[in-house]
Length: 258
Ligand SMILES: NC(=O)C1=CN([C@@H]2O[C@H](COP(=O)(O)OP(=O)(O)OC[C@H]3O[C@@H](n4cnc5c(N)ncnc54)[C@H](OP(=O)(O)O)[C@@H]3O)[C@@H](O)[C@H]2O)C=CC1
Ligand SMILES: O=C(O)C1=N[C@H](C(=O)O)C[C@H](O)C1
Image (tube, rainbow, N blue to C red; front, side, top):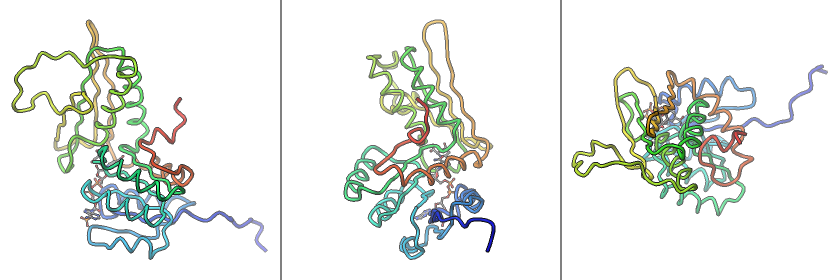
């Protein structure tokens, strides 16, 4: 008889959708290196979603494109599978639809994580804490030119959290005398915050939140130089999601930050 006690814990059986992508390739290595996980299916754009259930997955990891992410989540939830979503583009409308689906599956957990990197999650959290103390706030997100969506999911989440923090204490909009801006040179308005998207060869994923008030400026900047920066957050999401039924929005909800 072996002197080592056999583990009785079942591995987390992950089906990865978006396995051929840049994030997917990193996720494959990270899941293979995790003792408590088994990668049971790898799907790409031509794969039927039935591959997920046929492989006996307990968890789905979605790293695809905004146009298909909600269909993948709907399939996963309908089949009672815990789901971690890294794909961007999850608007409020899409999140509401998913919430309604989850109401039918009260034991299923879904995490939508606009950003898996701890530095970005912290930068967003700190920016939201600071934002009520400044008259003006604007966000600049900067990404590689292969990114298909703008603004980034991280910028949207950051704008939402900043807007909520300012609203809670009654801080009004950033001052701005612009009267004519037919070409949207002032950027997109997300939750009332101006967001500017830069796409530049050589960049990976970067964000600056600029805050100003008379006589001073505060800048929160995060740089992801490599996709390995997201993998600890991906694994944390997969390990935690089953214990958090319903919809969680933002990896910060899985971190003990308060
Ligand atoms: N939350 C976070 O921290 C991060 C999120 N992201 C987000 O993750 C997503 C993936 O990024 P990235 O890996 O760079 O993108 P890639 O373009 O490198 O990969 C996209 C993947 O999606 C697959 N795909 C495309 N269409 C479909 C479809 N109809 N059904 C199923 N799969 C499909 C592609 O498969 P195929 O090869 O067959 O076309 C490919 O595997 C993006 O939304 C990005 O914004 C990125 C970095 C960090
Ligand atoms: O496409 C990317 O690269 C990234 N997408 C996510 C987003 O839209 O925020 C996360 C990170 O910015 C990298």
